[in-house]
Length: 272
Image: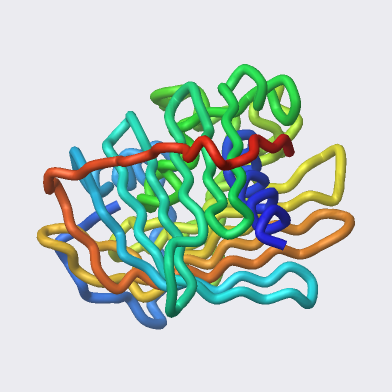
């Protein structure tokens, strides 16, 4: 059963790959939004993103695949633009599994079933999606805007995206429902107008029923930044609906972190 959950976690990582912080804490209510230019909103999102060298996130989480449910707690450690380290435990008990993701590798240890998985990104790209990038997962976890092809120019944004007002939020959509030659679509990016923080992202595949929805909730101050305390991730495909609800109960910035990962010789290597 743990292997099933790990496969869906990998699906979240890969789906993200193919498919901000402000000092004010006041919120707009029942006010008509001023329709700004997309490049102004985009630049403001980037300007207000959280800045960090390292970040650690202690969390509790609940997952659901079909009728199967699992509750757990754990820690996420990130070194900016370098490594994501995830340790997951049941609500009471020893570590169940550990995951390490870098720009060129994905590694996993299942301590319950005593097995492990290791792969480089070339294999991930070949087996799953050629557009896999580490940066996309880090952006999702840190509530940052996903830059599919680096810095967007004003002309690029004007040509490829449109702006709508949806439920008192700015909603940025790609005009052609296509990000260049990617087979996965970025359909919607919802932005809070008072803080320019992303509160919802939707990706949908044009080749299958697969869809990824990420929702950010309960924003609160973190030093001089604003950060969501709750993140809901949902992956929908033609067979199952995978739901992951994450609650961050402790967040630390720019502390010295370690990212331990060692494999017992008694563990068996597996493939996905």
